[in-house]
Amino acid sequence: MSPPPRVVATEAALELITRLRARHGPVIFHQSGGCCDGSSPMCYAEGDLITGDSDRRIGEIGGCAFFIGAAQFDYWRHTQLVIDVVPGRGGMFSLENGEGVRFLTRSRVFTDEEYLALKAVEGGPELLR
Image 1 (cartoon, rainbow, N blue to C red):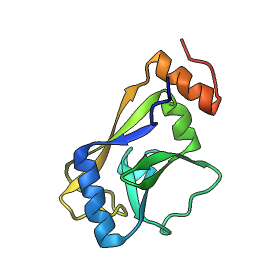
Image 2 (cartoon, one colour):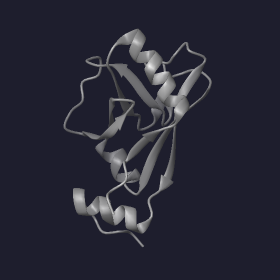
Image 3 (cartoon, rainbow, N blue to C red):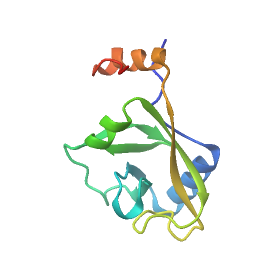
């Protein structure tokens, strides 16, 4: 079994990403670890957010890199992030702010088989039981 992607996007999210890329050029995402914008994925123009050693690139959505903080990744290691769009206001610094919608992270737990496939490729801790 090939490993599943760690992050995917709904059609609504992909459509919004396309609009944002047309308006702002290349963009990246960073999964917030909480605080002011809760656990919202934040969308930035490429170059507006400097990622560091404590950030982990976990995949791409809509052709855009998706990063998450290492501590947040450790917490969500067993889940696939599903990026969606819902009505509301985006995060203050996120590019969808003012669009009348915001990105939202949903998640689903990987099956044991999916997680073992990821572990075979990435390494990491054993399944927790």
